[in-house]
Length: 380
Image (tube, rainbow, N blue to C red; front, side):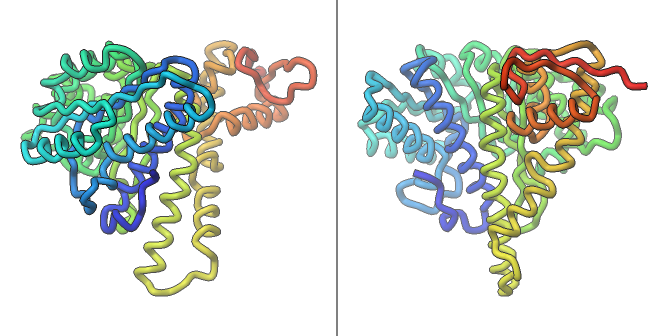
């Protein structure tokens, strides 16, 4: 069941977050349950519920995930894919919220649901035992940044699955410069001496951009993920950055799926902002919400001119180190910039036509293939 915007009045950014979560989960579950594993584990590390407006928690992340994954399992079952299992682990530290989660689990007793009281970091071993087999997707959605990341990264490395982290950009940006929270940022970055590296980064980067860069470096160096693409979610009623969703994955295909979902959800976010704007001004626009949103996405969204320009610079920098396989190059591009796989292929064709790079394609193939070798053309 998809998120319903009317349930998120005044917190539309959470609607966008849940929309991304469910769309990515759906795609990941179809791919996983038809090949990699017959068991899919979903871990909600900070389950809440938080600020829900419905009695059945249908606007909570854990309910959205349950309904999405069960729909995938049921659909595959109808098509002859049998023996599939979905397992849920919900973690929450607030006692009143834990009781609500337990009540939810009882109401949905047909599903395997484990509720873990206490902090996520203190339950990692128990959660790992519950998710003893199958593919594990972990949703990490804290209200801030005071997380002990070192044991969390070790858990994520051990599970060898994927995770989606809600990076609270607005709060991080506001507080990162305060000495009073230096210790909590050290726990978040799994580095008590983080401030030296933070200060060494370019001054033109915002506080949250520098913290995010350090966090991604630690995610990768810890072995929790190979790739960590992110997308921004704005606060629709104020049109400023609220959060970033960061995917942790070891799969190039995971990066490609992330950008496919990014494009869809980005358009939904723009439509949400346009709708709110019309409602607040009580003035219907000359253009429809759909037309305004599509124009905005083409101007500054996934695959826009700015993204293509940044991707081209990255490609030329990467090729200056030597030829590269398309599969590797595309993953690097899609991780760093809002570019889908097909857009990256099209960009390489344009760059080839411009004489910036070269590659050979077999037969009637028109676009680079995973093993296509891309080489820079020396410029006069």
